[in-house]
Image (cartoon, rainbow, N blue to C red):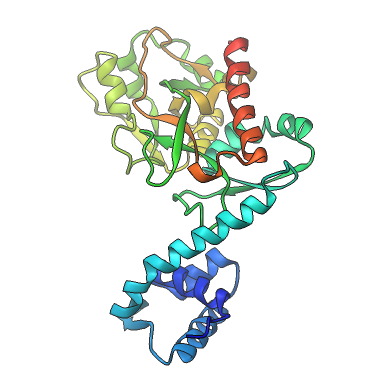
Length: 308
């Protein structure tokens, strides 16, 4: 059998099968849906066989044929091997592009304010940030390293704990001046409480109800609530004086240091069961620029601890 030259078509097919959509595959591959559709059709013509059943229930959904479904694991394994080979061609140097995946909130509140220090020590490395709310496929999307928040277990990735986290209420200095004083945690129920929904699908993510219970407040009925699915936006709402946020210590550190926010009830300690982890594929552990970035992340955490 003659080896097909349709590597781009195979990428388009794999992404379309994973997303069950040409549009979603196009967004991942940074091309148009029409281009993805044409690549898949060219592969179907070369094979002289269909690869998808097109299900139309108001929105077209792509279901791989039985034959296509059987082939997908081998195709994905092949792409993984290709990426490893390309990375090994580059692994002798720290120069080049390092792709880092983090959440948008972690990028805004922790990573970006510190990134210039990495670029000072590794000026030959260009950092490309992938700020995706959903976990990405490191091999398919050519991600070198990332920081994830959770319990520390992600299939196919090595994880190392970077930072633990505590949660506590914070508010703006202006709101505190207007309120004058919160004598008991139960008094927070009279205020607008800002809820972080960004990790609702993660078991163990701390909530206001859990913090109030820890603080000895049995009645959790609140006067007003704001719900936001982005941790950075939660903190910005608190800075703007819109209410009291249950802050994550890693995200809020710089805002506390600058005086933008004030911690309430510091005597109440509530440690999150979730933590931040550095994650990467085991086969890429020896890549020099990945190692340099990993070491820098831990040095920044140590720097923060010394400054506390």
